[in-house]
Image (cartoon, rainbow, N blue to C red; front, side, top):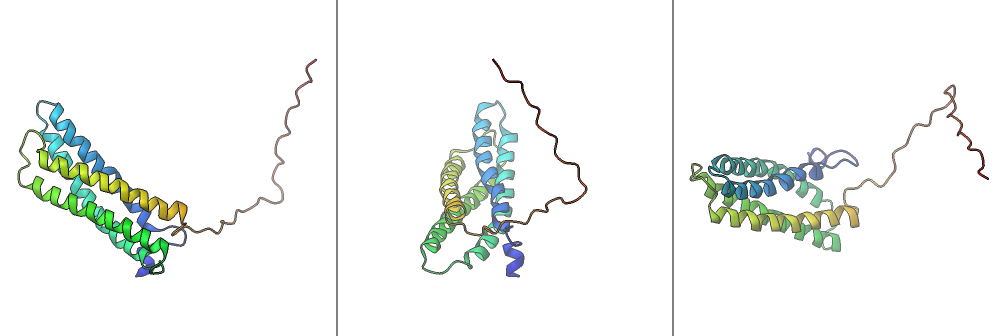
Amino acid sequence: MANLLQGGRGRPLHPALVHFPLALYPTSLLFDCLSHLVDDGNPFVKGAFALILVGLVISVGAVVTGFADFLLIEAGARVWKLAVTHMTFQLVTGGLFLANVILRGRDLDVTASAVGPIVLSAVGVATLAVGGFLGSELVYRHGRRVDRRPERLEVPRGDEDPPPARAEHPARS
């Protein structure tokens, strides 16, 4: 089961899933702002609710696969502490957007998003950004879940045509 949650060699599932909440949550905040700029922002209010809801559903998969990756890290190491901080920020983000969707679900017939959910979205997007930055540190700086072995490339052999010769330019005088 752990291999299924961690993805294939060099192809972890967690990074593939996190792109959705990283896009959906900020877009919901944009929809909130747009709901105040048009006469009847109700489609944007409902759209923001739907974006958050879909983001939460996909976040469950991101949390599960991220935790499976976390279990591969040696406890107490510097990278482990960074991973715990990343996980904490992302769990707080999930909690903020869960509270947000609960508040919004009470009244979807408003003409513009209420201030409370907008504040929750703004704080949630901020914690999401910090957690996302920490996650990128785990991958790009510390190489977590990165297969560093290069893939073998097949070199063509035999009867292929040689590459075209470069055209020579006459020397300028």
